[in-house]
Image (spheres, rainbow, N blue to C red):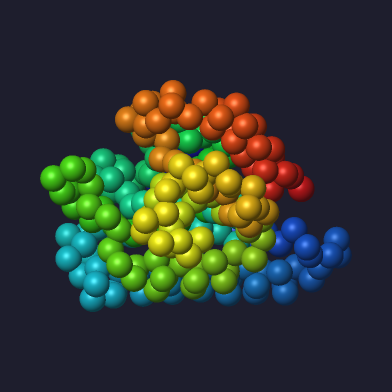
Length: 232
């Protein structure tokens, strides 16, 4: 699974086309043309990201944008930005935080890293650097520039999981002063399109203990929503 995922990231030919709404009887030639056109569009966006002046420093070092997108994806996971280790390994969420996130979602690694099921679209596709208290925030305007282009090619997204404050405040149009705890507690107000979450970092264990309602009420609902979104 890991080797296939890395190969997907290296080529970003990003995936075969799967349209769950297509009729049982389709013209093979027409389907092949649509598939090729979709692959070309995903590749065009990938190339445009690499060529953007905003990302020139990364491209000059041979660092490609890190995300996973495919036209058949049913769920989008939007987090902060790749960490240094993820960027070097070319594999997001391959750590304890990722293990916990998969547990929260109720899915295994194979499902998580299948771009035809799960699109992984962070707020920035590059590691933004380190600050005094951890990784720097995603660059302003990055998500607004590239997310719409990718989501336009993923018409079957049924649920968008927002992980952490940056994704949550941006996608839900909240002020920077908005309490992420309150937003997550009131997650039902943003369904069925969005499901806001705190970051699954082990450092949030204290928060989990202070807010037992999260494990008792929110996580069962999250698993239910994920199951429904992935169901054929």
